[in-house]
Length: 247
Image 1 (tube, rainbow, N blue to C red):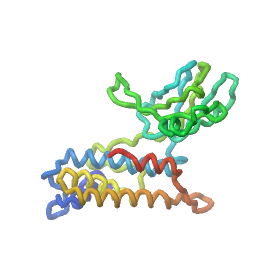
Image 2: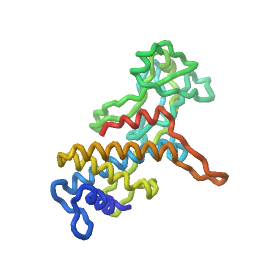
Image 3: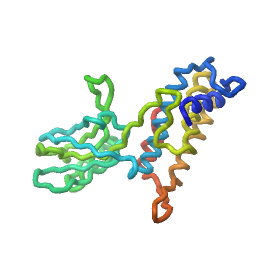
Image 4: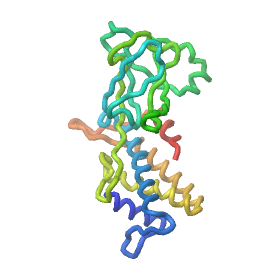
């Protein structure tokens, strides 16, 4: 579906279309509709890309600095959508990266994991404000026991999911999303529409339907390979993180 078709689908859900089924500006404006469609495009994309990360990840590197705990990334990764994998070198003699496991900071301190060691390193995701760009970037933070002790060129390796390009024109489409997922974009945008209208019961019902549909789809997502049809299940930690996505 193009952005125009998504907007018309969104309009039909909130009963704001003309006799030909085209969206018309009324209580909800074109600007609001297009913003909400792009917002939910990114959310649906995040779910789908995380469930199929092998097809969506790109690699970025950062130089580690002695005793520095927080890192962000440049280039195309400066505005990454999600982190899929982190690897770290602790010494210039290391030939391979050690896999670093993600952990929520609250869980780390609440459950007594302060004794984490370099043999099982962990990291936290951290939103860091960039004064140059004027917005927050997603980076990584290492707890005290896991902070790099040497400055190493490309000592930090990250596999990440890129943020999709926004739909700026009516002819633009949600890139890399299969057609059957497009309806969830307009459905999510309709939640915002109902909330603006004060139709909170409808917004709540549609939110619940949207969340169930997303979780159900991702739990049963099938990826075709040349050998066989493979069932892919989203990791539990990703389900928890994205289910709590702040709308």
